[in-house]
Image 1 (tube, rainbow, N blue to C red):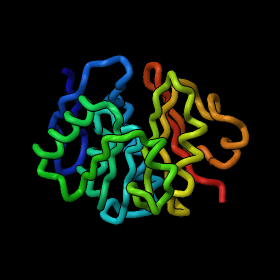
Image 2 (cartoon, rainbow, N blue to C red):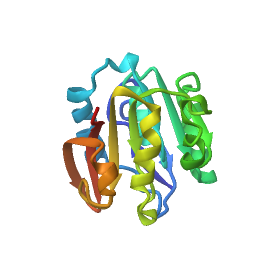
Image 3 (tube, rainbow, N blue to C red):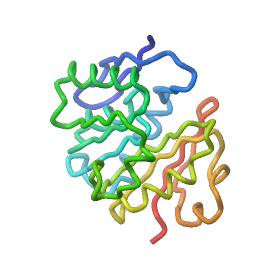
Image 4 (cartoon, helix red, strand yellow):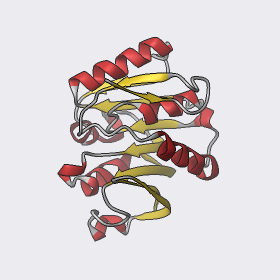
Length: 194
């Protein structure tokens, strides 16, 4: 087991247990700090008005960080059973079941039902970090579009800088506001082209 640290908000400096597996890549503290600095500048809402989706939750660090900063509701989706148990344990320890809603499922399966499905929505902020080996970033972006508010922001992690790895027809539907990299991972801040 490894650990990640919450870097801001009411649970600042609290640590979360995370699985030590190569396919689960918790966003490093520095990269998370960069992303949340972007959001402080770009998020068109107060945190208390924000509905968040952490679509491939992994450690749950991004979704839990959002809740720590005051997000109204955070939905986390994770398909790995042991990762789900770690997130569920964190929700219990933080006494945050009223804010954090966890699904043990495939995001791709849940999202196909749109905003009338179990995920609900619309969401103001989405963290999108599909498995790098699957090259599924185009599909993930396509599936989240119906789940978003018009001003929603998407933070996407991928193995390549934007728009590499995303089909051109999908990339044209998004505007990239910021980009950064940390190790093997690239983060970008996106919004829909309306």
